[in-house]
Length: 247
Image (cartoon, rainbow, N blue to C red):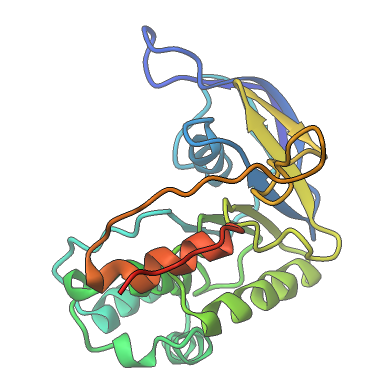
């Protein structure tokens, strides 16, 4: 899959989000995309998935089977989880048995009878992952897939990614939590100032030390709803931050 001089902006009067990208994605590769908030990571992933076309340039040789899991799964749909996934399996000509297999592997079996609108952020992420994996993808695009996931799914997902790559599929993951940092053979792309730099990545908070080598630290108090505390703390720890919860 090749990007040739690809640029993108949402309208003629908007600033360029990405400019003159020339990139190649080989079969069997895993790419971790990092960058600051608003750098254009999600836009790059939507371009790769074919959801939006380039404003300029071309994207060639995209695999026929594309799985895409957005960073925010659209739960405002009048379905139960099972009805939604069954509908998606029919659209994608997938075996209905795959739904149960993926739900078991991702710890989502207990969610199958729930309405989509009742799902938490982490639960919705699981359903987004399942729909992206209903057929073996030649290209799998995951936008912040680890956000809000429980430990079981955090452990299962890198193994699934590795299996897809081993079968010749290409996987691109936008991941501010650096869960694929140590995955053997993974490439790293840094999105910054409208460009994409292969072989570079955003440093984790632990690596962002002062010139003298000692980390510079300060305390920031974050107040959240009690129901969201576990999810927020989990995300902060995954990003490399130390947390301390008050009573």
